[in-house]
Image (cartoon, rainbow, N blue to C red; front, top):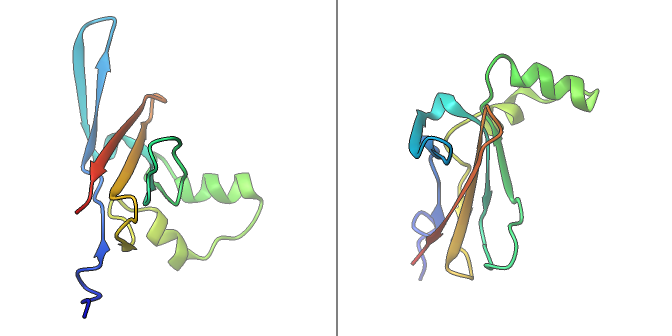
Length: 116
């Protein structure tokens, strides 16, 4: 019998490292350097499908999203999106997840993780 506590995963976005090809250096930022991040919770290697989206953003991402959508956003729902810890999700059938992170400069990094 499966245990629902162990059948779900969560991901924490601790930061982002970006390679600067013009200098040959790696720039590291903590969670404060993340503008937004996304998870494909069942990555199939062929394409990245956003199944979870999180918006940390500088300034006031809540206000910016409300303005862009021209709508009110439930603050409780927003608090789950404005977080560096994902909502729980089921283990993937593919055995892989992919996490894509975008920093405030628009640099994008993606990493694939095997999930047993």
